Length: 147
Image 1 (cartoon, one colour):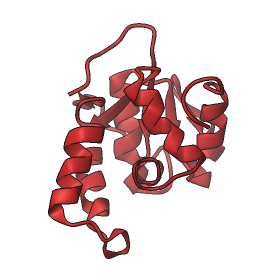
Image 2: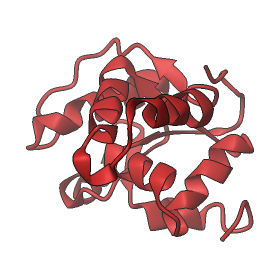
Image 3: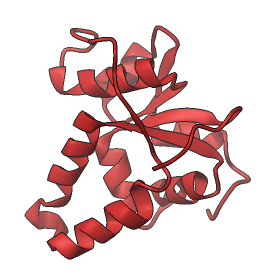
Image 4: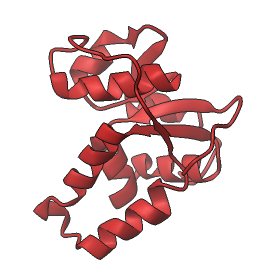
């Protein structure tokens, strides 16, 4: 699993952003190059990792268990730091499904949660964590990785 790197931007990617980065070509796929190059330090918790595994099994992605295992073992686990949230987060956003991502970010010292969720982006910030869209985040790394 990924190791903590000093001075590298710590970030939590919501499941939709992470799945899009892993499975589809386009601007969001730049996230893969950023974490592989060590330009950002992505974080997961057991709960957010569980959601990722569940979403990858959705029929619309047509992935078998071997493909899912390969994605997780080759593209995620070597680069992501697993965080054990110590501070329960509830009610920051109206959607309780967002709470584990916020808890992971706060406990892991993330600067950003990258999300396409308009409610989260609308909050702009919780404690020291800022909520940004993928485009907003990627502007910070315009010269890194493939475009």
